[in-house]
Amino acid sequence: MSTQSSAKRPNILWIMSDQHNASCIGAAGHPDVKTPHLDAIAADGVLADRAYCNNPICGPSRCSMITGLYPHTLGITGNNLTGCPVPNPLTLPTHLRHLGYQTAMIGKGHEVTTWDREAYEHLRYCDLTDAEPDDPRTCHYFNYLVEQGLADDFDLGSLPEDHPGSGMRGFVSAIPAEHCVETWTGNESLAFLENKADDKPFFLKMSFQRPHDPYAPSSQQMGQYDPSTLTLPDNSCDYLENRFAGKPQFQQDYISAGQRGYPYRPVDADDLKVQLAYHLTLITEIDKQIGRVVEHLKQTGEYENTIIVYLADHGDFAGEHGLMLKNMGIYESIHRVPMIFRYPKGPKNQTVHGLMQLVDVYPTLCALAGLPIPEHLDGSNQVPLLQGQSDGLDHVVCEWDFGSHDQSCVFAVRTDRYRLVYYLDHPDDGELYDHQLDPGELTNLWASEQHQSQRMQLTALILNHVGRFKRAWSIADDRKAFEAQPDALTYHIHKWKMKWSDAVAKGMVKN
Image 1 (cartoon, one colour):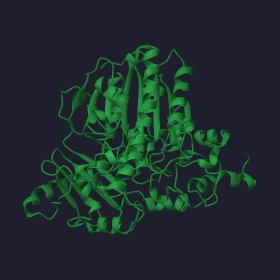
Image 2 (tube, helix red, strand yellow; image 1 turned 90 degrees about the vertical axis):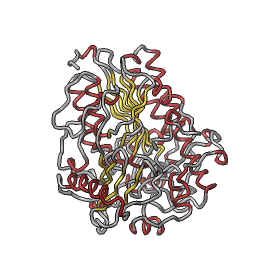
Image 3 (cartoon, rainbow, N blue to C red; image 1 turned 30 degrees about the vertical axis):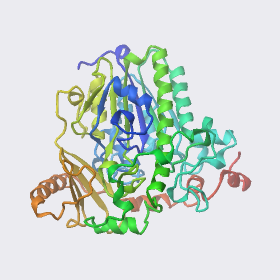
Image 4 (cartoon, helix red, strand yellow; image 1 turned 180 degrees about the horizontal axis):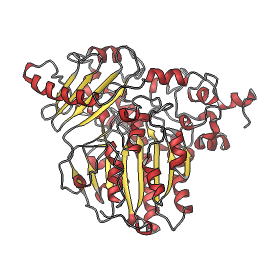
């Protein structure tokens, strides 16, 4: 594509959710979820049904996709975002800003905040992880709740042991629907669109905090899903029935002990359906806000000249394997992400099945907009895949640094047929699944004599990937850095060690 003049360049609306299982969209065939607005975008565009994240947790995945660089290239493979060896990467919004776009980010950042300040002319955060350490009110949504008298009900972080949502259970939020984070994100996105300059194309990153846990819809949003009628995934029997045979010892220890990521597991199928109902409710609420923004673009005549992409930073089990949340290995339900592209004069109501990855989104958007693609990116332009002219990638790799000393790195490689999971510090205890015969990943073929050639070939792909970098640090280092300032007010509120009203009463802040 030739580079277009600024006046004719298309707008870009990047819609992002956090922890959304790729199957939980109506257009993807889910039997229960209600997503009419995402379905409409898919009907007017292309659903990429085998898109994958490059890291299965929030921070590194977000940093990777916005820079077009693999997590190991950045040195960010865990949630430590404080000392990136690449201090000033050319992020997509920075690149667009240099090319004459007005740029905005509304919602959850969870990227390196110094990048954000350079990249976005308009910035409105909803997550306390993006706030200044000593001032929660620099989180715009939290400040909004303070002004509404609702700050003590903030429930987007960890919860106290006596809270009904402790242990990551779903619960009903005390925050009314008109003040919930989805509504706030929609309102702020519309405010930007209504007040932006008319002489420049825009890039708007509309980044939803949820359906990431805690799953906490408002009371007014409840009732959209009856848990008793929900359909559980075919492989939900897995951990519900404690089917540990054949799984790596690390996984068995991790989930059976209720460690770190799994302080709470659904106790049976009925309990799992209750948690799933909370989760699907949040997806539907996100969908409603997407509909508001798309309708605004249509009413203002900007829809036809706007590229829209919808994606998530990683998946959620959403009932698969009998689990919710994430944080255990790299199953398909966590690695695969929803992805929809709608663009001017593009294909309509198409689904493509080739492999692509989140690191490809940056160069693909540049190509769709007729903009130069920086040569240093790890990602590649996947417009040919979207237009049915390519079969996509041969394989995709996901990498994750757990941050513990004995199980520090895990990698997964996905090809058209197979998934192999490789634990760097335990190379003899891995996972291999044949998706042609076992799409639910219930039978681990790692030790199968008949599959040793596939295991060797796929392991070689990972080792080649690993050999390209030296790990910079781990989540353990991130944890130490985060706790280095234990009195930071944001830390206390985020971990529910202190409520806003208590901080005001102690004179630590002004209400």
